[in-house]
Image 1: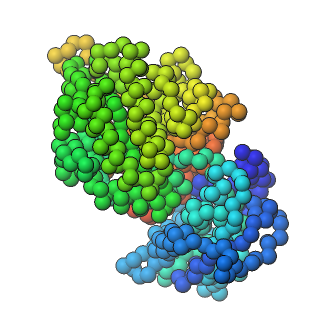
Image 2 (image 1 turned 90 degrees about the horizontal axis):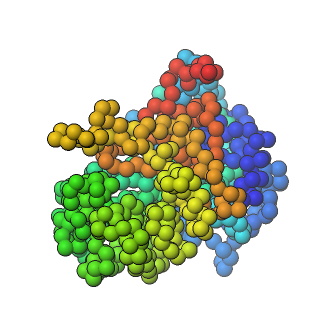
Image 3 (image 1 turned 60 degrees about the horizontal axis):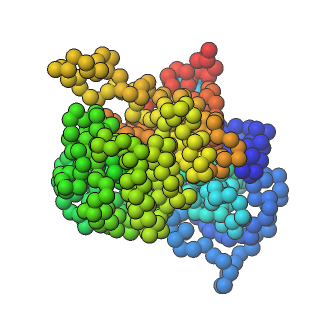
Length: 587
């Protein structure tokens, strides 16, 4: 990661990124004010690369315009960026009082009545042009696709240099955070930035930056997921993992198996139709986010019993805690021809529909209970290997990358193709070793996101009731959940994912995911549980290990204002008095 190391070192020399979240590698700025013209124009150009693209001290290369048979910006890239520019225009520019902008007055971040705003009586200079400059990508690490260089000149010209449309999306996300609304309502049409000239150079540390969102245990609608995607895009995430089925319900429509969602969901209002999933995945793609599915198997599948009872072993077997991690007990049968046929039909339906939007498909595999099969773990491992071999081969046949949970490796010692991505969730194995370190030691690509740091559902109390007829019940006051306490945003931000990983194996760590399991979360409280903690994880995924400080608090507090302006119900980061009185809330 030589490019990352170079940029990180240079950023220490140049300075910090003010209120931008996630913080860019490099941010140089001045103090001139420019306003954004409501009629700004967008242009696309193509340029041969020079070695100095990521350096701020080299002269700007001479531009060449290509015509006829020379390379041009492809239409799909232009459509993606045009769509992003239109969304940014809607957010930053107010058409009328009926259609206000989604920009905020930064009064919370200055002493009372002391916002350092520009004098509106003076002449205004405007940003009138935004140019996307496409460059030929060099042979560097994959993250270069998402890199961007953002330059704003004193004359009001904006240039976003990129190798790929993903970089353009991130550049626009950063650009919008440079602006504020003026407190004078007569100036509500256009926002201003006080930082010109601006030079920003940026790229992510990790390739995979995701949120795992459970849409099965309680009802979370496509509309609520799309609102979440807006927040993820603002924090430069690029993956949304939908945990789409579990023991309690099956909300995902499978046209080849119509009874599955019809009988397996809680209610018809919970069902995600084929059109719903397509719309959500396309919505994410336009924001640079792959929305991919997890269909957990063979465990966590009791909901299949409602439509296909002959496929499930130990359905609702009691006491449930002897046969499953949570009620309702029940797992897909192994070495069963009907189960194999069911899985083939299921995957042949789902995989072709999801393939246009993502390269990934998650097959689950966590918390498979040997007791449900009346087997010992070593016996179960043999049958589980055959099961997993088959479902992974199905994913490969559709040219997708399979993902599984860590238990297949750490608990059952299965052998998986080296194309498989293994997702870890436990901080330590039973022998006290790092789960992530154990996975990469065996040569597998892996994702991080431990329950003790990045499980956002923890700390709200348990959801299992005490059995009053059982004097040995462990469910008692204070009714804590298994993963308490709550991970506040500072704890989320303090997570160091590579702490136990030898340098020579760090290339196998593709990135990670922060998790929102759904036992006590639905669309009503989703926003406040996700935000701003998910944004805190986003900066770790973008930049790697960080340290909590007042600067971080203030930047995240500004990000919270952007989320709220976008209609996302993010919780507060800090007491407003502390934001208005810098340096007075430290100890």
